[in-house]
Length: 153
Image (cartoon, rainbow, N blue to C red; front, top):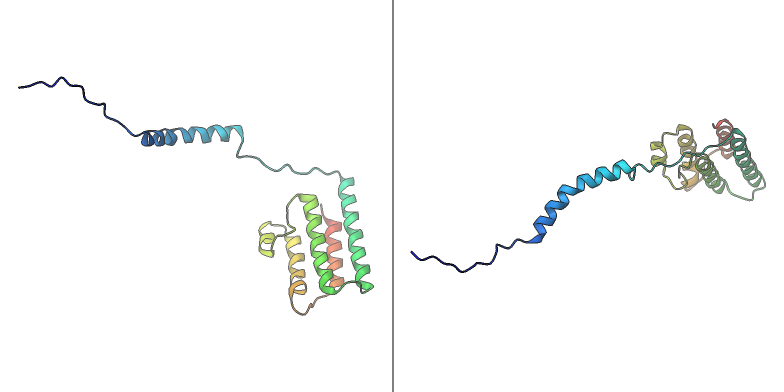
């Protein structure tokens, strides 16, 4: 029996499986660390308004609605355009007070926000705003919008 004394090359391993195994073992710890540090909990800060500020914002938007009504009475704008401006005014009002970006939300998206008053107003504006023949009572819609703004908060 012969004994071989020549040294063989060490068994070589690929680094890829070892690195993958390390990543799989370390990722949960990294995730827990980041969660503990609050990286995933970045909540929007709620705007704090004094009653004076809220009343001032309401006053501004009620004046804008009055201006819209005057433009409509003077026949400076069409009913369809008035509905479009009315929709944007109430959306901007809600955004200014809540920080919810509703300016470009669809009706379905607004419904999901669970603000029934806003949903009902925008729903009322949709048909006259987008149909070929704009039907609707714009004066009534403006009055409803004024009422919502007046009662807000």
